[in-house]
Amino acid sequence: RFDTYRTFEVVHEKCIDLKVTVHRGESITKGSRFKDALDTPDPYIVLRIPQLKFNTPKRTVTQDNCINPRWDQTFNFYLCTNPIEPYVIEIILMDENILKDEAIDKEYYSLDSLEEGIPKDCTFTFKGNSKVFITFLKQI
Image 1: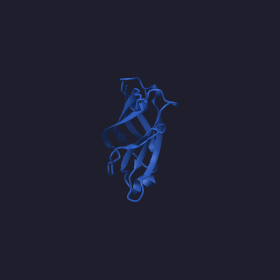
Image 2: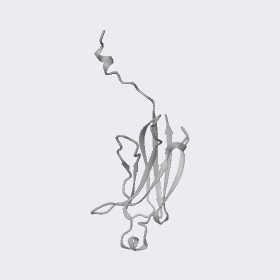
Image 3: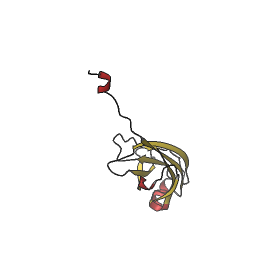
Image 4: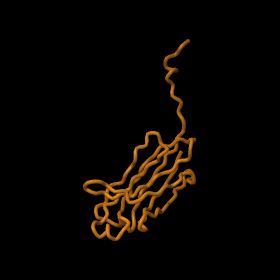
C-alpha cells in the first residue's frame, strides 16, 4: 500500500557543531604606517566556511578606533560528519569605514586537525604582525 508520509520521510544524520570563539586582537594595523597615521583601525572579524552550501558569513561587532580589540564572541557552524572535501575556515580581518569596509588580510585554517570535545586555541598573524586569538571546539 502507498503511504504518502513515507514518500517525504527525512533521514537524519549526525552533524558536527563547531563553536568558534573570537577572543581578541592585538596590535591591529592596516598594514602600513601611512594608513595607520591617517586613521586608527575599526576592526572586526568575518568567519566563513567556503564548503558550506548555504554559507552565511558570521561577523563580530566592530571595535571603533581600537588596535587591541576584545570581542569574546562565539559562533556556531553546523557541518556534515562526512564532507566531500575537508572543511577550511576563512578568517578575514576587516576595517569598518564610512563608505566601504576594507579587508585588511585573511587567513585559512583546516578544521581536520580538531579533535572532538577538545578546545584548540589558535593565534592567527595577519599583515603588519596583527594577531587574532580564536578558540575552536568540535562537538558531535
